[in-house]
Length: 306
Image: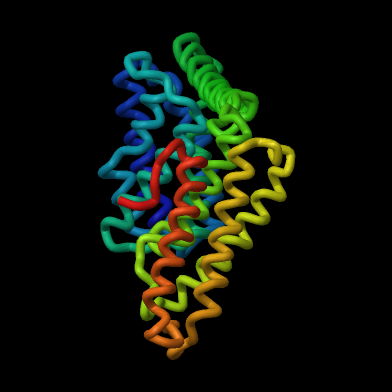
């Protein structure tokens, strides 16, 4: 089995070597390349009988897709764009594996390495023999230079990435360009949105109010207290004072409702006595006016109410 496969595969390789080298007037290298490839490929196949290297699918790929000619063209033919060795070592095995898989044969990960070794042997021999001839030597140098060029491009790309990162780090972010007071206002506004304070203020809490309103106002006041503590250096600013006052008044509003209303279940609270509604409604209106006045002071005259 192994001998038959070896003969078939070496025959395919020899034929492609001969045809391609004749086409580029380099037949003089045929025997040297053939003998070296035969020796190394035979050794590789003998050690890996029963793998993809001795399969019919692999020999059919070699015969039909002519990867040996591809390698010779890339490294030897002056009519082709020089191709880096590393590029060939990646692209040819990948194309081989994809073609074999399309035919319905799966390739274990360990055998992918064998495919790379196989074509690596061919590439290594061709590059080595290229050193001897003038035209081929020039092609080999071009291939080496392409490898170096590709490496330089990769390094340059990484350097560019590093420079971009450093530039971003050194350039002030949008927040860094803002004044500390503006950042405080933005953070405060986010808390208003997250805790749905405007929705709570616009809603009529009487006679029944969602219990979540109470929890949201508690969370809001706690978060504002932390925010103000983090920005204590701004405490003399009028906006800072207005934010504190706004939070204090939300706390008072929540406390007032808590004293006048009782839970009716797990999701709502209701006024203790319906008779209190009218008096409470007037008090609530006044409290909301004071809260909105603080809101206007913080947000350049913008009201919470339509």
